[in-house]
Length: 476
Image (cartoon, rainbow, N blue to C red; front, side, top):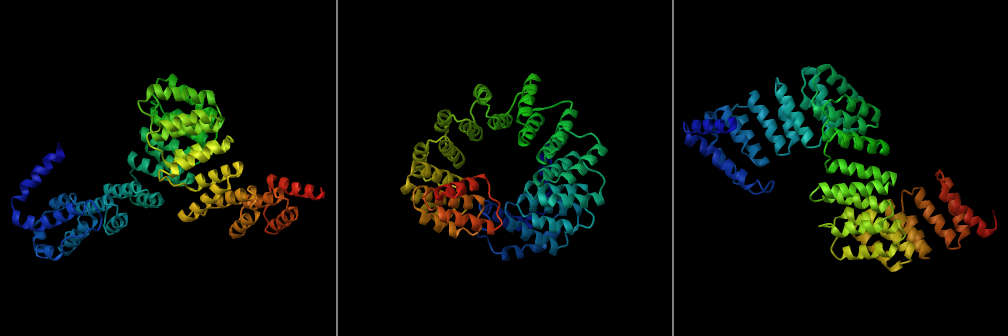
C-alpha cells in the first residue's frame, strides 16, 4: 500500500515538468521494455538521448530512483548511469544505493561493486544490499571477505546478514569462519529460526554433526526446516540410523514432513539398504503428497535400484511424466549392477531414439553392460557416440578398456589405454586384467612392473589380476 501511494505521489510530481521528464524517460523506457527479453539486443542510438540530457538536471533524486527501478536491461541502465554522472547526481547515498541494487538485480554484480566502492560513506543498508546481491548470484567466495570488511565499519548486524554469511560458510565448507559467525550470533543474541537452521546446515556440511545436534537441541520451537536440516546433516555425515531416529521424533512431535525431509530419509534408507523402511516411506509419500516431484521419484528409484529391486524401480521409472538424464542413468546403472545387462541396453537404445544423450556415468554403465553381455557392436557404437559428443572422462576410458578386453579386442583396449594421459589405478587394473583374461600373461606382468615404476600403489584387484597371470605361467 505504501509503495502504491509513493507511485501516485511520484506521478503527481511528474506533472510539474512533463515534457522535460518524458523526453528523457520515453527513449529509455522504450529501450528497456524492448530489450527485456534478450540482453544486448538492438536499441535506438544514444543521439536521441543526447538531445534530452539537459532535462536530467530538473529531475529530483526520488524520481531518478523510481526510473531506475523500471529498467529491465543493463545497457539502458549504463546509459542512464552516464547521464547521472554527467549532471552530478552521483554521490547521493539514496541514489548510489539504488544503483547498486539495480545493477545487482540485472546480474551485473561487478558494476554494482564498483558503484559501492565509490560511495564515500555507505550506511548499513547499502552494505546489506551489496552483500545480498553477492548471495543471490551465488558468489559465495566474495561474501565472507566483504562481510569482514563490513565488520570493520559497522558492529551492528541482523539476522538476514547472519543467514547469508552462514550460507556462504556452508557452501565453501568454511568451518573457521562459521565458528566466528556463531560467536557473533551468540554475542548479538536473538537469532531467528533462519539463523539457527543456517547454523545446523553449516556445521552439518562442514562435518561437525555433533555441533549441529547441539544447536538443534537449543531450538525451542522447531519447524519442519530445522528438523529437515538436522536429518540431512546426519545422512550426509554417514549417520543414517540417527537420521531415521530423528525422523521418528519429528513424527512424534506432530510436525508434517515436506519432500526434502522425505528425500533425506530415503537417502538414509538407501545407505542402510533398509528396503522395508524405504517402502514405508514410499507409501507415506504416496498417501500425503498429491504428486511426487521428479526429484523425489528419482530418489525412490535410486533406493530400489541399490536395494536390488529393479522391478519396483522400473515401475517408478515408467510412471515418470518426463524422463530426464538422472532417472535414465539411475535405471541403467541399476540394471547393470543387478546383472541384467540386456534390460539396461534395451533401455539405453529406447531413450537414445528419443534424442536423450548420455553423460559419462550413463556411457560407463552401458559399456559395463556391454562387457557383461559381450555386445561388441553396441559397445563400439557407444564409443563412437562418446567421441562425437565429447565424453573424454577417465571413467569412460576405463569402461572402454574393460569392454574391449572382455570382448577379446585386446589391441583396441591397449590403444585406448595408451591414449590415456593421466592413468589412475582403475585404468591400470582394467588393462592388466584384460591381458590376464586373454591369455597374455607376460604382457600383464610387464604392465604391472611398469605401473610400479610410476609409483602407483596397487590395490586388491591389481594383485588378484597379477597373481592370475602368474598362475597361468606356473610362476606362483
